Structure formats: structure tokens, C-alpha cells
Image (cartoon, rainbow, N blue to C red; front, side):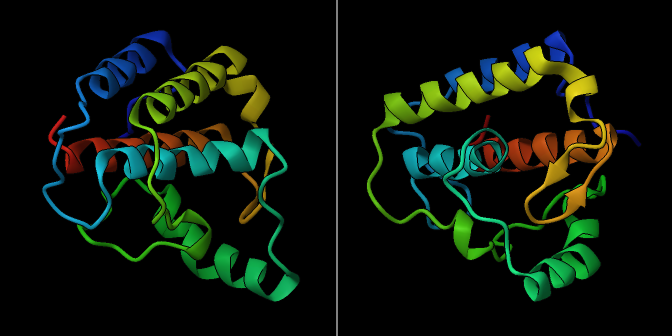
Length: 152
């Protein structure tokens, strides 16, 4: 079953509507992050695409990520609750709820506006070149996992 296409306006609008249902008081159904930390965590894949904040892993780590992790990230199977996360994705510092929500919404909109063509064959820092479907699955699946974590 294909995941919803994050590059389409109706899916993007639906995801943003879910993000706007979050409040500073939203509590996780699993996991350790609070809602602002979760939104900062959800921004990391976008930071890896749109900023220079994160560096490409070394050859050995990239080989491991491409060989063993990528298939779990880009497939259509939902992430299990309390899954381990990569160190670059860990957020433990306090975050500003409103700022993180706006940052996440902006990244989702930017991705949709750039569209599928922009991402087809685009290189991921961790996984190398990816297809539009792989990018879609990575973006949508991660957001959906964490929005469900917070009940929206």
C-alpha cells in the first residue's frame, strides 16, 4: 500500500492541519520527547536537505546506513513505537513550541512547493541518491509516526 504523497497539496495540508492540532500541553503516547522536542526532531530530515547543519557520514557509516538502515526508513511499514533513533536526530534540549511548529510547517511547505521533480534522484546525506517514492516515504512516514505519537 503506497503512503500518502507528501508532495501533493492535499496531503501537505492534512499534515499541517495535524501539526496545528498540537498544543504545548500535548502529551506523547510513547517515548521521551515533549511536543516541542518532537517537532525539532521532525525538522532534522529537512535540515539535512535544506541546510548545511549536518555533515555527510563517513564512508563506513554511510555504507552501513545504505545497506542496513535505508530499507527500514523508506519502506511503507510504520515505525515501531520507541524505535531507536540516530544520534543526529536526538533532541534533549528545551525547545520553543511556537518556533519549532512554524519551522516544521515551513519545511513541509517548502518540500511540497519544490515538488517531486526536485527530489527525484536527489542525494540524501545518509542514503545516497533516492527516488521520489523513497523521499516521500521517508518524509511522510516519519511525520506520521510522530504525529500519531502525540495523538493527532
